[in-house]
Length: 72
Image 1 (cartoon, helix red, strand yellow):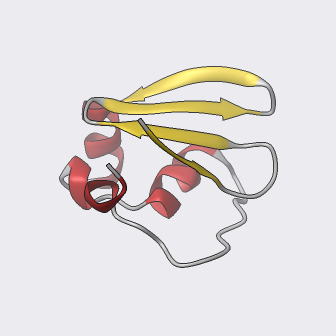
Image 2 (cartoon, rainbow, N blue to C red):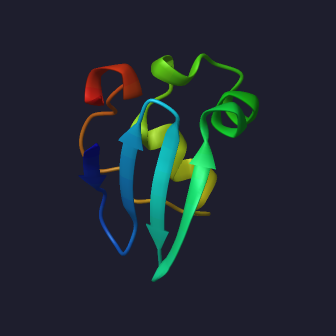
């Protein structure tokens, strides 16, 4: 599993089937299908920044966005 710790208290861990998220101490999973439905894009073309926007209302988008396909 590849991970990205993007500012604040949010941690994202990507795999081929979805993303494990820790947001403000709460752990949950976003499925590949949910992410594709929310973004209208193929899962592997979605960026870590787009996933953060699903999780957080005002995410800190420091750094360049990275495609999930490149992360895993």
